[in-house]
Image (tube, rainbow, N blue to C red):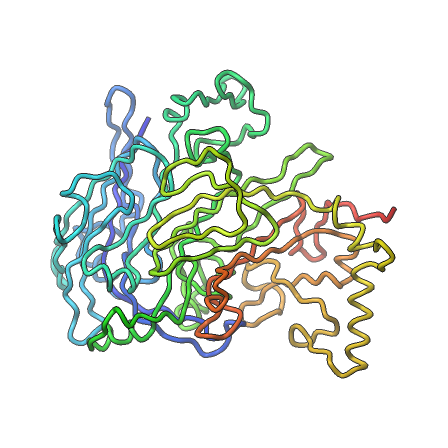
Length: 507
């Protein structure tokens, strides 16, 4: 069974407010952007034998035949554009309406297009001005002028899309989004990967696969390969902003692209610390403080380690790295080595491992990680001490006292009384008091709550061109995210926390 997916995208402009410092509470930098808004409009099921079900409208607000819908979407662009998810065998129809860029004076009436980067498509639907076509502007109050693109993916993988009209400018301005193609049950079956209908167990060429849970679906595989299974996948869309260029476009003054010099670096359209926020912000924080982004672009990665007592294996998690910027991104993940299982929507079967992935402009990588439990190696040293050294907690307490006495103590956050940093544990708004107005819940390894508990573990992942981990030179910022690894069943943000992990006992 496959589907027809009807996406309605609308080209328009808008503003985003980027952080200027490490807390996100400083006055923000307002940036003019272009983008696509809208999303999935309707879905139609295609059964075996070609029988078509009814087309079901899922988002009536994206109906292009209603002029009021168009006018409501004008000026609402953010970065990135909506994420598109589909499966092998599905048919994708992207209907593009160009709403024009009416936040400028006078309006900018550029043509716009949709190019599926990496898509194996015919020239006529490639969205390239030199060989294809662009969509003209629909003025306010007028019926939509639309043209529809068609794409039927032949294989799964991590793709993206962007405007190819005046691509040097329009991509920089923000007209791009992720397009993820998952295997279908049919494409998996052709590779010998099936789910037993009677037991729910997964089989590969007739052999049971106990490492794959019964709850898994075809969307827990990156490719038609049993080794591409993951518990969760996360899009990391890398881009950057030259604010001088954006200002020039808004003012409609000349800017030579060869003078491009970015000063903000983004993951999924946000710079740290905004990369820790949920995709949707409450109205009290958006748009003057931060901004909401489309669903599917969460960049605060949260996974679980294994539990030997219940034979639960560590989570496998997939980072889908996409680089739409104009510079390569050496993205480094702390704590683990990852396995390259795909590049540019093509599977890699050699099992190449790395800890830094150099993602060139226009490339995508699929990197698979395992959230392994590091207690067996490190817990004795951290909580008990080894080789004549006291526990790490005792060492930090002593270093705190000595630095206070020496007059060299620098608190890692306002009000801190020791050298342990408060780590941002959960980005749900309305709890805790760490950095107002975010109200993040903190976790401090030096606190009594954390005594003898290994988890949660926190790991940075960031651009290793470290000046790009700033907001216009202010560290930390830019292309930096956090990965939280929890012990299964724990909920550290509860009061008191729910902790199922057993405390470490010294030998």
